[in-house]
Picture (cartoon, one colour):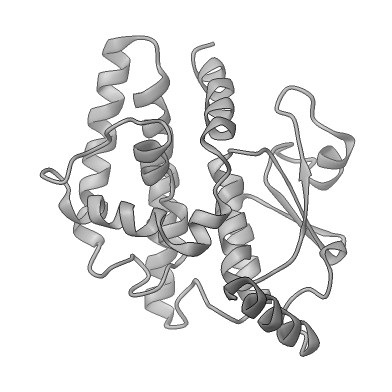
Length: 236
């Protein structure tokens, strides 16, 4: 019933040009399990956009990837009508500006600026620290990374005022911060407890159980396979 309703809504939106008419108009180059790719997939799910997923390999980058992202040579790359867009946060902004339904970025200039600020904060201060705190072999370095991450998460705890960072609905900051529930749920690593960071702890569960997020997530096995590769890169 729900799936048929979603399909009907998609057809209506496609008819008025609000979403891509076919997956040939949009494709996403990525690796299954990558949180940066999952960011884009969640945004596309929230918008109801059909697209073709093109799997990539970290160790053997395709000619297509090198063609579409010759500068950084990495995923994700979102290609819409043969125009490539790289870097997950940039892609999220492109998607939101191209398809107006279910906005993930505030229209108010100040709120939009704050959303960009906290999204960048997450990438700069949280993502690398989170990966290092989980996957580094050296225990001392891992502990230092964990302390760095916890200090950064305290800022996010103070910033979280509603159910989501975007208010009552998921926004770009929530999508940017998806590594938190991933580490909690998939890697089975306690970044924090309900006692230390209660608002983030509750947000984590609400975000991970949101229909668009839950239906987008790859299997636990697929994600663990991705992080196994990442762990090898981090400890080189």
